[in-house]
Image 1 (cartoon, rainbow, N blue to C red):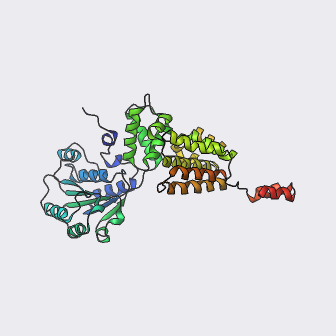
Image 2: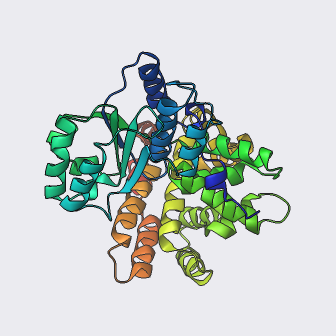
Length: 388
């Protein structure tokens, strides 16, 4: 049997399997139980958060031979046909390639026929924001007076491009980005099911790289599992995903503290020489500075759960004592600005080197309390030198 990738193998089969979208799942379940299913929905959210998957689950819930039920059996002929994508009652249309008025007119003509085996005919239009103006006008009439037992589910990553006249005739559900903690926990269950040993920090890196997308995290996990030999380690995951190690950032922060310009600039050179992407480097440096900043706030790192392990949090706490909060905030601003300008720069290396030099020449902040304490035991000249 051909290998099935994790993104397909572990695609949710029921509402309870959808990760991080409880507010949507509970609403749809109760709507089915109370027989208050709308004729049109808009599912919005970033890629890989469960829009099309939830649409398929809703299709099975409504057409299951034991339903309508919020818990479709997954075994009857209707459920299995929908799972295989072979059901005549569930149409999935790509709005990007079928975005013309003729496509919508053809769809409108087809939905007039009664369902073959299920109770409802369900039309799922993915990337619906790609429809043309004339196509929207053709669809609008159908949504105003929908045929009996026909349900539209419009999935999109850009809801602002959907006309207000369409919005007003649909129920909108906003799918959230899934937190790194939830994704890492989900990946841990999959690793246990696949008998793959792992380090929590390795799964955390994958979860952060996925940027809120469960599907992306599964694809990344698949890739990493193919590379790693005896389980998932943080070192190997960083190598596969092209992530700069924390030791590089710690060395850079030490150079900044010691005002070691040559050593700090060599970090940028080494990052490029080792083949890392500068954008990934700036994102990692921002994350490192954020952890240092949070380490100065009692309990802040500990409250982030699986994101930072206790031993790692202790190291960050020790390192953060070398910098004032105000200094870390200004460093974060410099790196954030560099990250925003990096994508437009014709010479990204020089831009990053300038950002590092700005960090090196950053004046050290001192609180009023510290200055008063220093002034109490020193002369005016000493205080002036301290300020300069």
